[in-house]
Length: 425
Ligand SMILES: Cc1ncc(COP(=O)(O)O)c(C=O)c1O
Image (cartoon, rainbow, N blue to C red; front, side, top):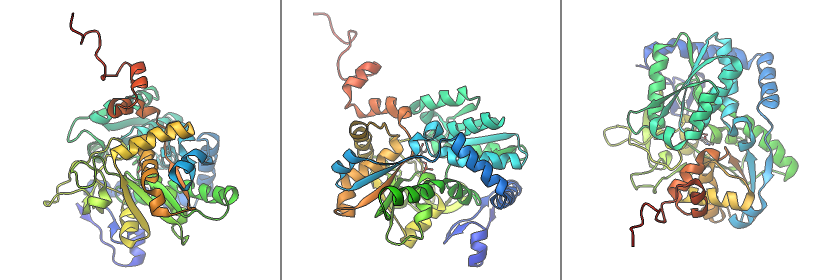
């Protein structure tokens, strides 16, 4: 294990530190690949041809810019003015493609024929499989077996796109375990393979690369808000798993005073319940998956299992820049329970005609229940609608139990006896 600690502020930025968090905590076998990636990113960042190809792909293939939409009925219910940044309308149905297209271009620059990825909700896996098809790359996606079950639609989508999906049976069979398996594959196949990490986490330079590639969300939103609403919002709100949609939503606002940056983590059955994924609220400083950040760990430093109804937020860690924004006070990190998320899911459907992914439904649920108290009268907010919820429909019907009509149509309603359950008179 090689451990990097920042000597000065200048080296800190170069080595991928955000305050005390970040760095590269990896086996020696990966050092060469990470150095190659640092160099490839440095070259690409300074190459106008890279920027131009990325921009063209984002527009002509990815469907950018995504709209900023004033959600009138949701605003009325929340008591604050809500503008949704519609990443759900991007190609593949979430923000994940922003990062993937950029890293796929880097993969080509490094001359590697294969990509691997981890996925929780399946959205990053789908985005990676999509880019692999587009660029003619071999693609393997690791996904916890529990997540394969609850996000089945995305498993089929990845397979249709030509990716091999490997269900991971270890641990809690969720995102953390999928990352462990992807890391193992990478160590073994590092010469031929780029590990296309899907969130703003992992060893340097991934948190920086992913932030820069997702920053397009806040760059667009800033311009759109000024044009459509005027001025700047009081707050920008995004859900936080590993932290890629949130850091992309915050990045261009960090230097703008007076705009509160609110990250909403998944609190599962509640903070302190033992069944939560609210890493910043409940966690401690720790090294997880290649960088120093905050993680859910017990007194012996062992990673605690996380829980969330949403597979994309069901992760016991968080990207290092969020740990820094939280500890420095620039960011506000709060949480929403499974129940809040289900409320956010249902009301976004009913009030706006938008079926949201369960991940951003956490941000909506928090806003509906706590937004007005937190932000006050007349507040205007941008909320990143990071993905669409087709993938979650089955799980919501299964878990929530409130939508009996839909459940009947799906044949999954267990609230009424079936013919088989009825005893003969
Ligand atoms: C739609 C959506 N939003 C948010 C997330 C959480 O990831 P991140 O925190 O990296 O944005 C996921 C993860 O799969 C997702 O699919």
